[in-house]
Length: 120
Image 1 (cartoon, rainbow, N blue to C red):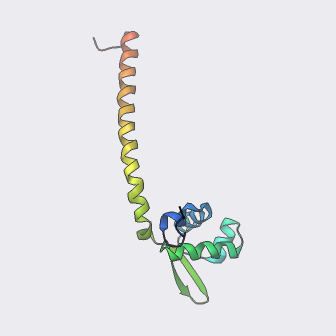
Image 2 (image 1 turned 180 degrees about the vertical axis):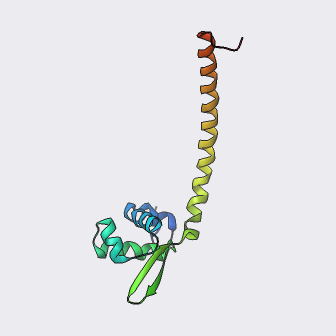
Image 3 (image 1 turned 120 degrees about the vertical axis):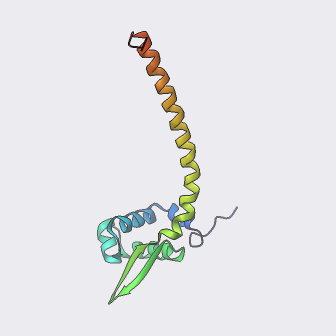
C-alpha cells in the first residue's frame, strides 16, 4: 500500500520529528524568521526551509513578508484534525484514571480498616 504524500496531509506532515520541533519552536517563541529557527533548533537552513515548505503546504504554518524577512507562525486551525483525533483517546484515558481513582480509594479504605483507622 502506497503511503500518502507528506505534503497533502497534516498527520503525515507532523509525523516527521523535526517538523514537530519547528512547530514547538513557533508555539513557544511566536512568529519567527527562518534564521532564528535555524539558530534555535541547531539545524541547517536548507533543512529548516524544506520542513517549513511541507508545513506550509499542509497549512500548519502561515508566512508573511516583513521587509526582506519571511516570518512563520503556527496555524492552529490546520492542526485541529489532529486535536480532534487525539481527543478520542483523551476520553479513554480520563475514564481509566477515574477507575484508577476508585481502586486507590478502595485500597485506602481497606488499609485504614486493617490498621483500625476506619470510622467505626
